[in-house]
Length: 225
Image (tube, rainbow, N blue to C red; front, top):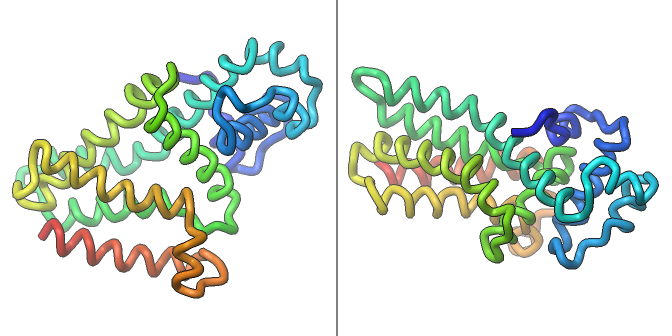
C-alpha cells in the first residue's frame, strides 16, 4: 500500500530525510488537530523544512493526511502479521486449543500497549488519536483504514474468540466482544491521565503495563473460558 513505511523507520530511530521529518511532524499535528484545523505551515515548522516541501513531496494537506493514514494502516498490518500467522496456524490445526487462542489474543491486544516513556508510545498515541477521530467523524481516509486495517483485525479476533470460547461466542457476539477487548486497550493508549491519578501512579511504565497485562489475562480467561 505504501512504497516505504516511515512509521516503522521512526520506531527504528530513523528520521533523516525531509520526507521522514514531514511524516513525523504531520503525524503529531494530525493527532492533535483535525484535517480542517491542521496547518501545513505548522507541520513544516515542526519538521524543520521549507513549507514548499509539503507540496513537493505530497501535493498538499489532504494528500499528506491520506498518506499518514496509509502509513498507519500499513504499519498496523505489518506489525499485526506475526499474530495473524499464529492465529491461522492454530485455526488450521486439527484440534485448535482454546488456551492457545487466549494466549494469542492476550499477546495481540497487549502487544498494542506501550509504556508512556517509550518512543513507540509517542508515535502510537498520535496514530490512535487519528484513527479514533476517523471512527467518530469519517472522511475519505476511513475507507483506507477499514479495508487495510479494521477488516483484517476483526476477522482475526472473531476467529480467535470463537476458538477461545469453544464456540460460546460467535457471529455478532464475537464481533462485539472483539470491539470491547480492543477498545479497552485503545483507551489506555489515548488517555491515561485519570487512570494514573486514580491509582496514584506517577508514570505508566513497564511495571504498570505488566499490571494491565496480568489483569487483562484474567479478564480474557474469565470471559472466554
